[in-house]
Length: 155
Image (cartoon, rainbow, N blue to C red; front, side):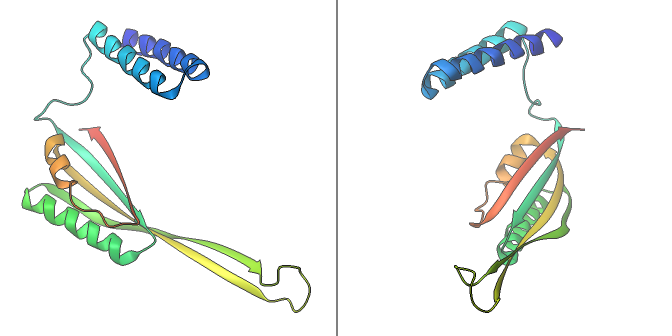
């Protein structure tokens, strides 16, 4: 396995060289060829086998609470239909981003201020399931404005 990572590091160096010299399309195809050569050479199969159970953490974030809750409910409902072990949605602390600015563009006149605020809401959902099942669950329609991050870890 160490040989694989050393070989992969060599591919990364070649990728950086190609980025400086070639167009992006040729760099991507060359990188894909080098990566597949590394996998074939070392006999390494990335990713879990089909039936292996994984711990999946889905992080959802949005400025719109209703859209976020709808996506959370859809994910949890889909997981429970498949009879998977589900924890969540766990509400994380809301991040409040504030900007205070002067109303007048020139700075003269009465000191009046505009206060703008954006709140970012976040939810965590933990699942334990095979990778194929998670692909089926996460293929739901996601509301616009909702960011989804999926992290897979072996048990």
